[in-house]
Image (cartoon, rainbow, N blue to C red; front, side, top):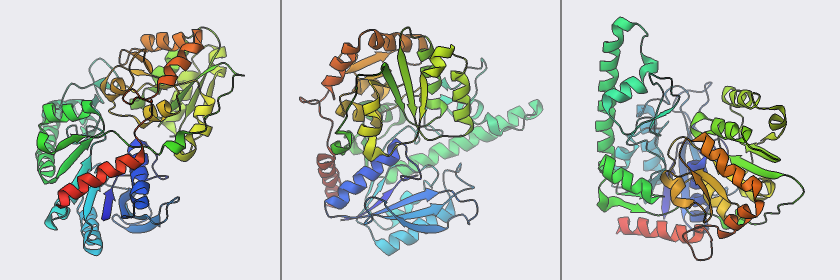
Length: 431
């Protein structure tokens, strides 16, 4: 088959979970003999909007990347120039399947271009972006200065006041006008998204929690909604070689943004008694990374010295560069994640995970079985669970040895079987 993958970023330009997963399945599809193209974005302010640059996957050059430039309009949900470039690519390639991973920073209207040409569309859900305009059900503004307050559900006026107030004029006399404008904007966006959903043939959720939430809270039709966990190249998680010559070491893997809860992890680490290390891996993000270092600087001096800021790593080397240097991985996200890749990857390397008892995090980490869970957003309880491992390193080893909870041997889903599952989805739609 000829497959066109659509994703809002692709490694190594963008290296978060959905991007890494997209690259993994592209590699797997090529291995099976399919022709794979990727339509993705970059942001180059010195080139025109919609400009197309051709590149190739650094590891599998058979995968051709079509990078559309979008440096100035990434906050829009649809963009005509991107639709035009995508339409031209569809006419050039005539793909059998369009497989979408994310449309944020691209254009929601891409689905209409594919449907005009009767091309089946598969959409893998990675977050809540279709049902929440900001994607994570976290509010940017709250009356009590509760930073990143959790949102219980989408509602147009609430979206306007709690998330889009950053676009208000700031004049109190114009506040009602601003609310009315953005309430209408959100309403139009949500109506449009419903039209987008109607064009998609199949939605894949990598967590049962996410599937159920989309069906129950958003009305995603059950007949075109299925659950398939992510698939992984297990060889990347092989070769962990952990030494016993340093204190118990916690690791964090991911981007330096507030939603990931690194600030709570640092605060929890500051409460620990005994000798321990915290290693934080990830690409430097300027002010956000500096702010995290400033939070670490408020800890007691001995704790400050025990926090190590590690460089970005390549996913293909995660076992050697990350898991060999950690005794446990902490996933402290303050948004309700659905199926973090790092949880699966750690489990494959038999590294225990500490995470919240919410969403897909609590679905894949079962407290006392293959890791430890704590009440979501509760820093004190996170510290208590971390302390258990510092006090009893053998507990960490026992939990880590269990691996993935939903297989008899602890192995996470392999990419080869995952590709077969995707192929079955594609073929079913083509038939």
